[in-house]
Image 1 (cartoon, helix red, strand yellow):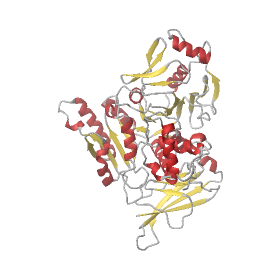
Image 2 (cartoon, helix red, strand yellow):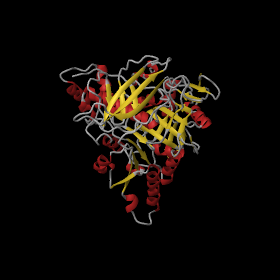
Image 3 (spheres, one colour):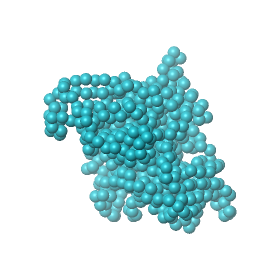
Image 4 (cartoon, one colour):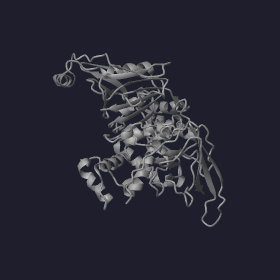
Length: 528
């Protein structure tokens, strides 16, 4: 059994992409509960939610499918329609951990291969008005130009006109790149937490870890957040469905009645509501993506009061982090190339391709999130690897992929065109594609072929295409990747193709590509 770990590379911004006009149209499907139309006629709430459904359906000329209790009830209809995009409009009280896991699994069940057949997103909110605002904010494209984070990993700040952060590892470290500046400047947080009103347990914690004072990480984060009103927020450190803790801080951000509030020892105050749209990626936080079947959750509060038009987060505790950090790596590598939805979609398919190469049962085997999986599940992995043996590093690698496979929630319209701004000097190759008749006619030969051409510039960097080492311990290198402008029908590689290429209806990966500056490379994909 082949156990080689193939590490991925992402391709740079395509400055030119010719449409791969395919026989398959990019169909959009909206899934919504029957209760929106079956409730009593005087139910204003149901009517308001139905207005959200109607607006989304009209925007994308979408097909509308109804379900009684679960979106999975419409699996057969989805197979018949074969959409490229699916949006689920639903009440927060219906959405929880298992709901999101099932959506991830359903996205791969339209055909027999292990890859997701459509990009999906959940449209929800504290109420129907909040869900409608999510749609209004995603009506027009958005380019991400400013950011605030609780991570050091974006410290180059090259993607942003302005960026600020507090570090989730080195408590007290922060940094800022102001408008008009080229680089980020690091410094120590000068704010100190006021311990007045803190209980004895918190006092002992602070004394043990920080002495008599502790840097007020939360205050610094909020100052940055409220000052810049960033297009993008990226966070890590401790979180649950009910709170977000700045690293080492005595205070927490919590939720109440669809809003965020600051819970300091002895005092509380609300985070000012935003009126501008944003993207929130808590990709290093546990549980914060889990609505937990209640509108009184962190995810709902961020979408409601802070206008998080796209929100991508974990619905379980996270430790390995490939699904979250990998999605971010796809987004910022060769920035501007992929939308947020496309970046996270491609990262997940990259994970699936690697799992399928190692053992295809890993792409479907259920993961028991309620057990002590560090003790119980390694035996299952060893069984899958038989007769080979897994090293400790391989065990963690595959357990991490398996754990992360189905647990990232995507809230927002999956077709919203929101992406990073391009970075000067990093658009160092182009990708074009065209559909043409297949010259090799004969029995069982596809009628067309899609010709993908990659041209590298004289200053092309293969290392940059691979992600330049960003979060290497979680994600490693990216492959060359391509998200087809239009879906291909029954794609396959020609006989004799020896490069390590994976292709599906929506995408193509070329693993370990040997590309050099100033060259042209061609990949042929046969399609009906």
